[in-house]
Image (cartoon, rainbow, N blue to C red; front, side):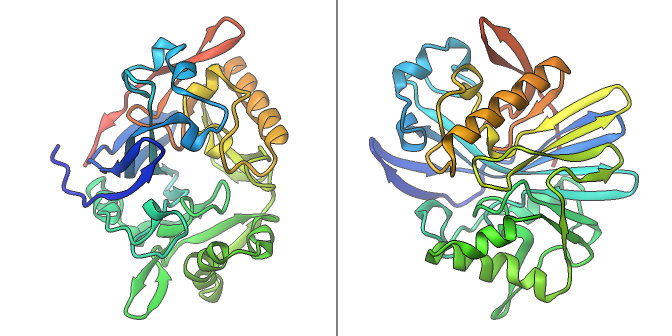
Length: 314
């Protein structure tokens, strides 16, 4: 399809990093749960060390299965920002609502975006007014933004009929951060939800009903969770930021640049991968590019990712 999105750009160690966001929404079925990936942006050509300080191009190219779907022939990576929308039993749930438009952020390629995310949501058959819940694996900039939108001079809830569920401790953690970006995130993406009375706190291991449950996977942030989906005989895992890119399946010791507790994040990554493999779960990578959904296949003592393409929508 035609890429009609304006681009956001910054400069990495090896040159410009452009962020085109083509219309790549797709849909999967997990038992009774319908899951739609709605893409905000996808960035290609990223030098590995830009996001993973202990990785380089040679490390990536040591795993040929990554090329060309998740890395290029030079060993550069692609990354995606997307939301997963879950529909089950009359519920419509937006999980991790991306960055959002018109925000001022410390990271240049997240600042002052102009993407057609809401238009893509509607094109996928999802009316913002019909959304019943908004969930968050954690409260980083690229997981909360479209919870609100600009209306005149104010930020208002994008999903006014929804309950926004925040994991115990994550709101307190965000509020405790002493930096301008955290204050901006709270002011434009969280406080309007609190003011509207739409927020609800849930446990890190909350049973969310209809086969959906949170599981604690701390490390990237203190209160980070992943989402398990168990419906009929089908099992799926939404990783959140426990795993940022498929190459970490083969190199689980490699940490993301913004992991709060590197050792704890590694433990969470190992544990969730072991469980996903043991249960033959469908794995949905929150930041996985191109083909974000697939299954784990043994590759010696680690794993490789085998894509499970969805049905194109929108």
